[in-house]
Length: 179
Image (cartoon, rainbow, N blue to C red; front, side):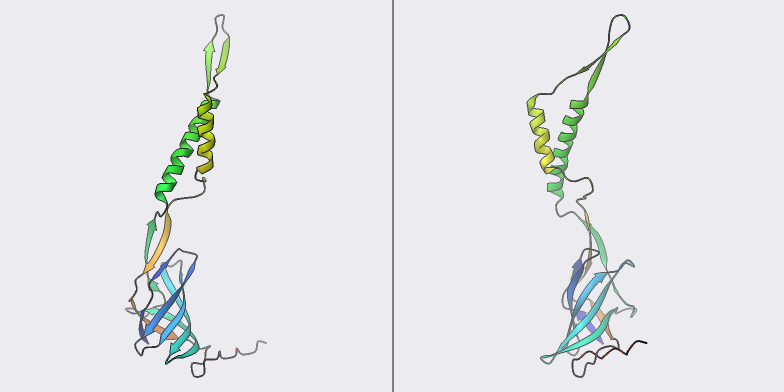
């Protein structure tokens, strides 16, 4: 059956989001959308509301142009916390500078062929600045950019009903016994 997305899909790979699809006959299907490694958004629908009745269904969304499972998605990169991460990163750089200053040595040649290693202690302000910078530094394994997946609201699609749910009375069809 032909339908359209009532809700757009906006998600982060690895997560699922609720989604609603309206069929041409006015029925509304509800389910979940997830991003597949193939680069498409897969939508599984499990509930249908039609004429104020709720039915349990087993259906999937198909792309309208090619009738293939999954909807094409726009995959992008976003940086929702970029400014805060830049500030934290620059403070982390200050911390690294202070640490390097603490470890810095100077080698001075002595008369007669020897060498002296000289270490200097930075002023107290640098110690305090390093401690403050460490409190807000961005962890090394984190990144400010996240991948997002979008499918627009109103996207035309087909809904394929699969065996496994009885749409006549809203009850799930019992599974066949295993051997």
